[in-house]
Length: 165
Image 1 (cartoon, helix red, strand yellow):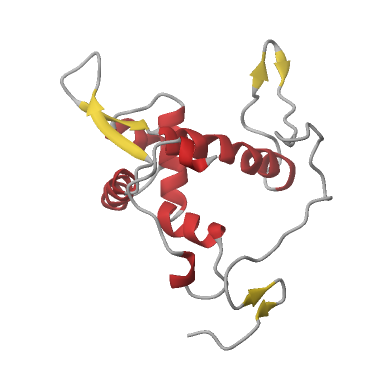
Image 2 (cartoon, one colour):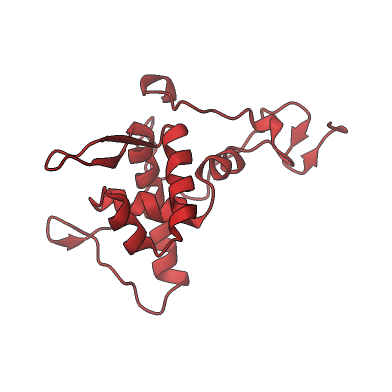
């Protein structure tokens, strides 16, 4: 339940975005571009300094600085002193840690459909990770048997039900 966690500093009303009100659109609006997800990846890997993040993402430093600032403002990253130096580093908030978990399926998809050979192996207790989605309420594995219900006024699965402005 999202109410059980720290609420990110910045939330978007999905009806204020162009097109269908959608949490994916709002998430992408918060995250920004590819440099944001790659920066989050680096922080997940334990690289907290700007120089490390810049080197490992290949991002232009001006664009990376802007993205990191946006991620801090959005409550996905926070800046705090590094334990072993006088510098500040970037660290994942609760929202950032959960976003890191959400990136796992994207990585799995990329390994299967986007690259010639997966560039990293992910292990758990010595075996390759095999993630599956399970409903926390009933315990069943989630497949294609989900239903969706639009709750945004004026929209259904096919699109707007009336002219929206």
